[in-house]
Length: 238
Image (cartoon, rainbow, N blue to C red; front, side, top):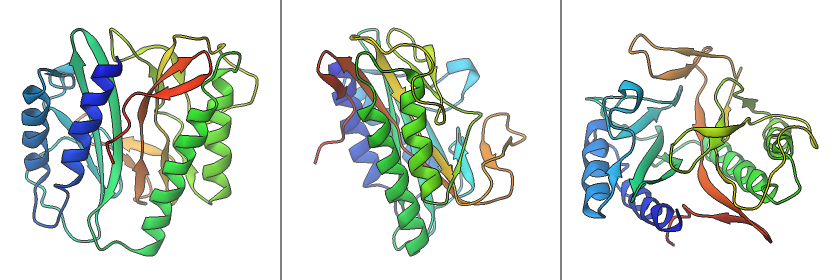
């Protein structure tokens, strides 16, 4: 899983550089497929529960699970990239939101605070803690920033399959939930909105949007719980 995570970090670093005005979301999907296969991996999302692409690309009010297509990116967009791959039978799942520069200051702050919430959640992924400690740390930071915390969609355990137990909500109470033990691997993925966090799914059956149309963002890492604490497996190269 360390190798799967390292390779996915490289893929996301490549994709991040392709987010620019004029690119289509399908361009990003094709680039993801190439980058994953060039590294001897299998695109995890293609065909997963019927998903038709290799990458989820969600723009602005779209929170997660956006299907790449003909949409052309414009300056100011917030573009969320969610990618998964399989290396020798092991999964890695990660993503980030990229500003299609230039972006507005309030959107830059949304990205900064949400990414910081992810890091705070990761810091709680240590032996002896509870799953609720992760969600509590994420929720406290996002709500202190004035943002909505998406509750219906969560992080998850990960390993031989993408979605394993336990679920990892982005809200919770400290000291509650399943115990975190050494060797557990988790995909932690805060999702925040500028407005109400209520969501709905579009007619394509996949794309999740903010019900009130407010813009959103998302960040995710696959994390292994070591004896001394969390190890981020999908960290993007500098």
